[in-house]
Structure formats: structure tokens, C-alpha cells
Amino acid sequence: MDTPLFSCGFAVIAGQPNAGKSTLLNKLLDYKLSIVTPKPQTTRKKITGIYHDNRRQIIFLDTPGIMQPQQKLHESMLAITRRTLEEADVVIALIPYTKGSEPYDLDFTAELFNAWLKPAGKPVIAVLNKSDLANRAVQEKAESVMTQLYSPAAVISVSALEGTGLEKLVEILTPFLPMDEPLYPEDMLSTAPERFFVSEIIREKIFLLYGKEVPYAAEVVVDEFKEQYENDPSRKDLIRCSVIVERDTQKQILIGSQGNALKKLGKAARADIEEMLGRPVFLELFIKVRPDWRKKHNLLKSYGY
Ligand SMILES: Nc1nc2c(ncn2[C@@H]2O[C@H](COP(=O)(O)OP(=O)(O)OP(=O)(O)O)[C@@H](O)[C@H]2O)c(=O)[nH]1
Image 1: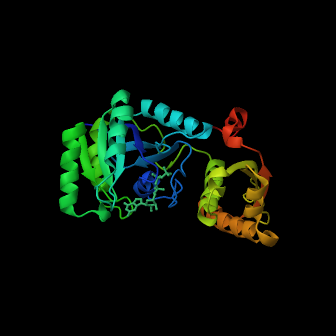
Image 2: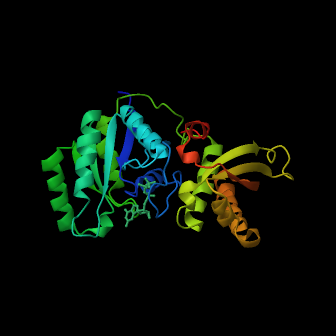
């Protein structure tokens, strides 16, 4: 009897901020791996998520959204996107439908294909996301225009939010993956460590709870992660984190009157961290001011950019 064929490879998700990359990844893996917020540019670093079934293992690499760099942090984020594209066996160009006069952002799509995807030279699947916002006639037209203009290897409309079209997308990606043994164990969802997800959860809550520039000026560093619950269930795991901001005024906003805003942040983050880890934690947040950290090479490096 023939051994069953198995494919394994890397699919990079690239697109504009807010295209729905994180939502797609979470839905495909049926797990909230990547933070999702209504604000653009929440994904700052590459995230690896691993999809596994009996025929294939697809290692998805999420990338920071492509935009015009306005500061050093953005330049580092774009460099991450460029390097990630080099690792791809296949690229998902994720383009969201919009409700405006154009079915999707025509200018950005031209830039995505011409400036980013063609030079990378990898097979590209054009994935039109948010299909719940466009009727079938609009979708068919958009798919055919996309094929004429950019000749991707395939075009498909999906709704990451509602989960439609995703099984078909997995089938479309498969022939582009090398025939190979799985690289990772089948129950492994990501290669990133737990402490990375802890800092991402806190960042997500900052994006959801605070307005204006505060979330963009904030970075979260896990200073200490003491696992003690497993050996002694009377003691919760202890997680100490610094929330870095650029100015004193931002620190005051994060803390809020009588510390109420910070308490709310801690409570919301702790609930999600406990759900992710499946055990109780004691979470301590310290707010620190590092003036202009987003412009300083050394600080960016120490935060992993
Ligand atoms: N209607 C609709 N909304 C969606 C869909 N997919 C994502 N969204 C919404 O679009 C917004 C952005 O989604 P994200 O998944 O955070 O987008 P992203 O591309 O990861 O964004 P960045 O982290 O900024 O690069 C969120 O409010 C999502 O709920 C979809 O299929 N349909």
C-alpha cells in the first residue's frame, strides 16, 4: 500500500493594516493566537501559527501590515515583513472588500503586488477577505479583475470573520507546499513562547481600553514569569510586566484616576491570560516612561524589533 502523501510548508499572510490577517489566522487555527482589534497596526511582530490535519501542516506567518513608514518602529516592522516573505512557499495576499465606491483599495493592491509580491517572486494566492461586505456579483467582478491585472496563482473570496471559504483556501494552498513530513508536533499551535502571548494579550487590552495615541505608544515587556502553580496549587503563577510609554501624560492616562483604569486593564488581561494558560495567575503591571522609545534604535532592539 502507498504511504499517504503529506505536505508541509510556510504560508505568509501579507496585506494592509486591518485587512483581517489576525482574524484569518485565529479562525484557521480555531484559536485566538493573534490579537484582533478594530484599530489598524496592532500586529507588530511576525507570528507563527501552525495548522495541522491528516494531509498537511501549514505554518502560517502573520506579518505587520504594509504602510508608509512614519517612524523607526514602522521601518523595523516593514523589514520584518520583507524577511518573512523570503521564508514563504506560498503567499496569501489578503485584500479586504470595502463598503466604499471601490470594491477594494485599488491603489494599495497595486502597490502590494508590484512593490512587494512580484519582487519576492513567490506564488501568490489573492484572498479577498470580508466577503460578507460584498454581494456575489461584486465578488465575481473583483476576482476577475484581480486575475487580469496580477495573474495570481489563484483568487478566492473568504470571510475570516464568518469562517466562509476557509476550507477551500486550505485546499488551494496545499499544492504549493513541499511534500514533506510535518516540521512540528500535531498539537503545537505556535512556536512563540507563552510569555510572548502574555505580552500580546496585555497589548490587545490596551488597544481596546484606551483611545488616541496611548496604545501606539505602549509596549509590553514581561520582566518575570514565575511558574509555581504546578508544583504548589496554593500559589498562583506570578507574572510581572512593564508597560512602556513615551510620556508622563500617557502614564497618567494608563493609570487613571485612583488607579482605576490600570485596575481595569489588569483585570481584563488577567482573565484572558488565565484562559490561555489554563491556570490562575497573579499579574502585576508597572508603567514606565521611556521618552521616544519608538525612535531609539537600542530600545527598539531590546524590545525585540
Ligand atoms: N466584516 C468583516 N470584518 C472582518 C473580517 N475579518 C476581519 N474583520 C475585522 O477587521 C478588523 C481588523 O482585523 P484584524 O484581524 O485585527 O486585522 P489585521 O490585518 O491583523 O490588522 P493589523 O494587526 O493592523 O495588521 C477587526 O475589527 C476584524 O473584526 C471579515 O471577514 N468580515
